[in-house]
Every structure is written in C-alpha cells, then in structure tokens.
Length: 490
Image (cartoon, rainbow, N blue to C red; front, side, top):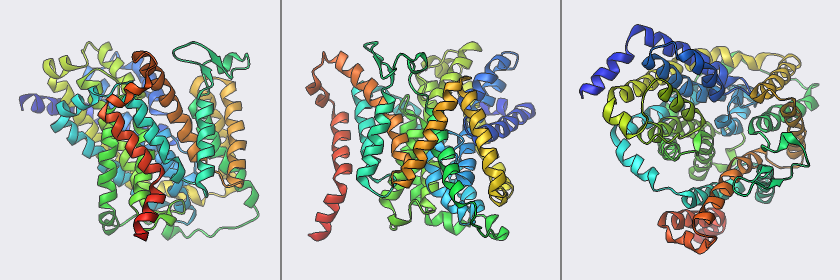
C-alpha cells in the first residue's frame, strides 16, 4: 500500500500531469496520421528522455502509447485510412457510419469503448498481475503457433461478400508475409535479387495502400455524385443508453484484448481483429456489419486498448516486451537504470504504480480529448472530396516514406492501393489480406521454432493442452456455419 501511495504521489505532480497531457495530444495526432505510429513517436522521444526525470519520461511514453492506439481510429472512421494498425478493424464499420453522416457518433463510440477497455486492463494488471504473468510464461512457440492459426480461422467471416474470397485474400496475405529471409534457415524467398525485399515487405505501406489509396481510387469513380451532409447529425454523440445496450460487447472485447495483450508479441492489432470477429459472432444482426454497425466499432476499440494495458504485464513483471511499443518502453526503463522484470516489481514497486497511474490518467484525458474533439474531427467529413482526398494522398505518401525513409515503401503503398481497389471491385475484402499478412509471419516463425525444439516431430505439438484447445477452437470456427445449420435443423 505504501508503494502505491508513493507511486501515485509521484505521478500527481503538476509537471507530470502536464507532460502526460502533452503526450496524449501528441499520441492522438500521431495515431491519426496514416503511416505514423506510437513506436515511431516513442523512438523519437527516447534520446530526449535522458534529460528528464525517470518517472516523467516513462509516464510520457506510457501515455503516448495509450493515446496513439486510440488516435488511429480517428482517420479510420473519417476517411477509411487507419492511422495505426490496431485501427484496421475499426474502419470496417466506422467509415460506413461516417459516410451516413454519423461521424460524431462513431468517434464517440470509439472514445468511450477505448477508455473502458484500457481502464479494465489496467485494473486487471493491478490486481492479477502475478497470475496473468504465470499464464503468459506457459506459452511456448507451439502455443503461439496454435493461437495464430486460430486467429487465421476467422478470415472466412471477417469481411467481404464471400467466405471463399476471404480465404483466398488471406492466403495471399500469408504469401506476402513469406517474402524475405527465413528466420531460421537464412534462405531468401521471393526477393528477385532485390535488396529492398530481403527484410520482407513492410506492413505499414501495405496497410496505407489497401485502405487509403484503395478508397481514394474507389471514391474517384463517384466525384460527379453529391452526398447530403446534415451538420446536426454529423456532430451528434452517442447516448448512454446506446452504450448500456452494447455493454456485453465491450466487456467481452476488453477481456479478450487484455488476454491477447499479455501474450508477448501478439499486440493490439491481433486483439482488434479478434474483437471485431467476436462482436460479429455474438451480434443479433450480423448482416449490419460492414454497413455501419455500432458493435463493429466498440468491439475492436475496446479490445485494442485493453491490449495496451495487457502488454505492460509481461513488460514490467517479466521483462518481456508485449508489443513493439512496450519494447521501446522497456529500453527506456533500462536506459534510466531500472531492471525490468521481477526485480522491478520487488525493488521499485512505486515505479510500477506510477506507470499505471500515468496510463489511467492518460485514458481519461484522451476520453475528454476524443469526446470534446469529436465535433471538430467529425467536420472533416464536410470537406469537399476534391480537397480531402488529394490531401489524403499526400499524407499517405509522406507516411509511407517516413516509416523507413525508403522510396521503395512508397511504391509498395501505391501498388497495394491498386490491388485494394481491384479487390473491392471484384468482391474481395482487404481485411483478410491484412490479417493474413500479420498472422502469417507469426505462424511461420513459431512453427519453425517449435519444429527445431521438437526435432521436426510435429506430433509432439499435441502434448500441450493449450495447443489442443486452440486447435479445437479453430475447427469449431471453420465449421461453425455447418454446425449452426445442423443445430437449428435438429
């Protein structure tokens, strides 16, 4: 209790509160810009943090992490260009809702569900960190492989007009993920003697191209059409009654996101995609998904922000980064002389409480920024498309280049944009391709590690009850339409 009081006393210093607020504003802006991300912003902040007090520096990074995850939903909803990878699933229903003239409502749903998921995961950490850390330790490469395969099984129902088309798009995404040098054998695959392809195809340019440029090309076909925008509807925020109606979706996604976040390297993107799929699975009106269903916003937003708190569990309790962003926070802790892991919890527990106090404050701050700014942000949809989309194109070019300062990434983004446009024309959803690209690398890398451990004896995978459980869930997910039909018939 003394450590908790000491930690919260540190974070409630007026200067630290001010720095957290600045970090929230930066995080929301960085998250909203396509191509820029929280890891990039924190990496830029690292050198400057050495001249700051340790608590102030780490608190700023933690606050930026939380706000950046939410910030990606702003452009995902307004212009179908996810500012950050975890906002991919938010665009599925957020953008159609904005096109209907309900951008303010969509942003309000995203803000409140994000804060709910974030606060839930933080309290889970405070009270159940030792238990959750022990669960995370039980996951070996074969368990991660089974989890990623389970996530891939959701491709059939994630978006688009056909399950077969979704699976084809997902397979293409997995294939793209194999480009580059194999992690265990060192063999080059599909590089065509191009040095730029030896490290693989970067995820960010593909994401920007599929969603932003693909939508830009799609919108270019309707420039001669006019859409009515009623301002009073555009800026209208969701009601408390609407949130109470979706409380179980928010709770379910918060639990799922926290669990996924605790698993090292899974991250908020996987949590968001799984949160969206589970929201759709339990929804009464599944046909509304993809057309502007509110559950399609609160599901992924609660999940991806819950994953931010969950990812801090292995980072602080075990010294194992739960995501790319927490890896940078881990580096900052070491730079400031701390020992992440059990030593941090035992020797300097007040630092742990200070970090999570900063994240709680940051969540409430970006709730205020999100709700207060929703009416301002939502007016972006009132900008004429002949002005808006050229601006989106410029930001997409800058964002793709800024990711790795490579013109090759800009070309990758443009090619992905053309592919995304053609996919939409022929009934293929871009989301399965993105999910295949994300999860394909996890499947391959963890399969390779597990096969080395077991001397290529894949039958030993089934010795793990966790693997068996995920494989059973995978089969149920793939054959659920058939099972539900038989169930209803009987």
